[in-house]
Structures are given as structure tokens and as C-alpha cells.
Image (cartoon, rainbow, N blue to C red; front, side, top):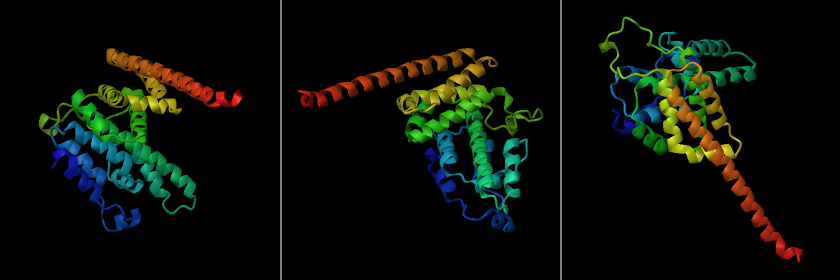
Length: 275
């Protein structure tokens, strides 16, 4: 089922999503792509790092508002984000509304919350092997946009820290049999592990994004400063902070070198015409 994630991802890609929400509910279709992902995370042991990264990428690129509404329509606050459920209900109430702009704004917020919700599920699934996770991110997170979006999402999760309620984590009556992947980690530690792996895998891309005006390094630094005040993982956070400061300095050096090279190039081009 999980051979390099190919079969699983192919199944997700083939999952029907063309029905409108009204038609879906009329036909009793209440199970969607996100239910499938959620069930796998709950019941499958030892999902490889590469598959976890592929699922995050799939959610970032392929999940629609309709998919999210279908998921939250049957979810409870014990298994999903309460904010996602609230936004989903709000979006459904606006299905027949004439204000498309307002409905679109709610849909955008709903998609963002779903990405945050499912990314938190991935990072807390297990204490991932750093080398395997970095390699998976290098191979499967491809574009600058994916790198930036995932890092901004991870930064937000790190900033939320222990204030974000995780599904199933407070179930005191659960037994080991109820939790087949007992290697789960806290949101703070899981997010730290994923940020470290992302920076190892894509520091060159991060510097390029920063040089082009992106706020990735700034957002990570803010999240780290916020988390340091309330986290037990001070050493890990300090390591990320040092890495970001080093990256920011490298970005400044690259800008300076680029400016000098451009200046020299301009001088060379202009010189013959100034004689």
C-alpha cells in the first residue's frame, strides 16, 4: 500500500472531487480524500518519512475547498480542528449566498486551516529520522512556492506551540492498541524536527526566496523567539535561530556580491562609450 507512497498517492489523485457539495450530500458521499489520509495516520504503523512529506505536498497542492468541507462536515472536535469545523459550517451556510467575495474569503481561510491541521498531524505522527526526512524533503518538495508555504506553515505551528489542541492526544482512556503509532511526538518537537530538516534540504532556496523579498527567515525567527519563552526545547530552538541568523547573513552577502558584480558589469559596459 505504501511502496514509496506511489499507490497511496495515486489513489488520492483518483478520488472523485468533481461533485458539488450539494450533489455530494444528496448522494450520500461523505468520505473524501482527507478522511482517507486521516484514517491512514490513525491506523497504519510506521509510515515512512517520504510518504509523510508526499502527503503534506498533496494537501498543499491538490486539496480543494469542497474536499475540506466534506472532511469537516463529519469531524468532531476530538479528531479535527475546532476552527476548521466552524469555518466549514460558515462556508456551507454561504453556499447559496450572492456575496461571492465573502464566500471566497471564508474558503481561503478554511483551506489555510486545513493545511495547518493536517501539517500538525504529519509532524506529530512520529519522531522522524532527520536524515530520511531531509532526503525526502529534498526529493519531493520541488518548487520555491512549496518550500515557502510549508516553512510558513511550520513557523505558524511553532508559534502556536502548546496552545494548539491536538486530536486524540488528551484521550486518557486510550490503550497502546488504540494508538498503533506510539512514537508520536509533541507539536513543538515535531515542528522543530521538520523545520530543521527543511532548512537542511533547502537552505539555498530559502536564501533565494529571502533575496527576492520573501519573509521566510523573518517568520521562522519570530516563531523561534515566541516558542523559546514557553518551550522545553531551548537547545533545539537555539540551533534553528543560529542557522537562520547565519542564513540571513549569507543572504546579505549574496545581495552585496550581486550588487558589486552588477556594478562592475555596468562599469565595463559603459567605459568604452565614455571615452
